[in-house]
Length: 150
Image (cartoon, rainbow, N blue to C red; front, side, top):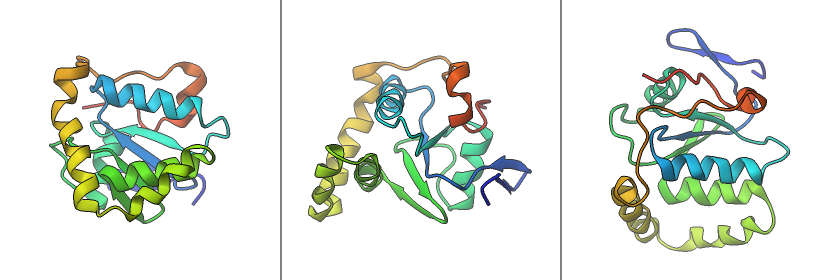
């Protein structure tokens, strides 16, 4: 449904584009979202903080943990991807030259995810964290779903 589909408590969550769920208080994650936005002028992606109401509802819908934010999640329709697979699928959707990295999906996921997990486990120490989720600038508000974080 292009206009949005209510999830659980009735928050309308658009389903017309892939959604990247990210840790809204992580500086690395926020920087990554900004990196994607700069390389996505066609606005192919929407974003939601894992801590936001929409993020929590999407995690619940897909049976993912709602308390520990150790991965970002790419939701494509009814399917979802986490960790390195989410990153590689996102790069593929961004197109050339980023899609050139997609063949790394052939590397066993256990190996790819170990690297991802190492960075994720150290991201707050290396890059710091915010006290609260980033509020998107007004010109990007339509790309973010439910900016209110819990």
